[in-house]
Length: 77
Image (cartoon, rainbow, N blue to C red):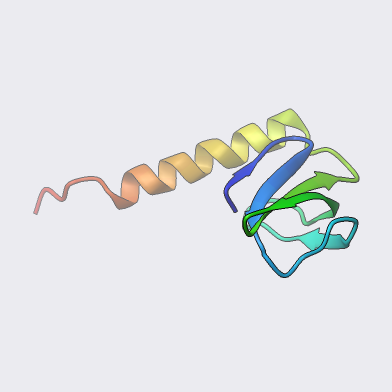
């Protein structure tokens, strides 16, 4: 996944076609039914049938940031 918003996502998936319906599964978020609305250079744009609530997406983004920060923090050992 390259990016995600309340209304859709951009992913690397050359095998998908415009108009195709898929189920996007992202760790930490509810799965979302989406359709492919564009394709270019191996990337596709997805539009969700049901938006992600802002509070859910913000919480997911904060948790992802926290995990990445903690995984890359210098060790005091």
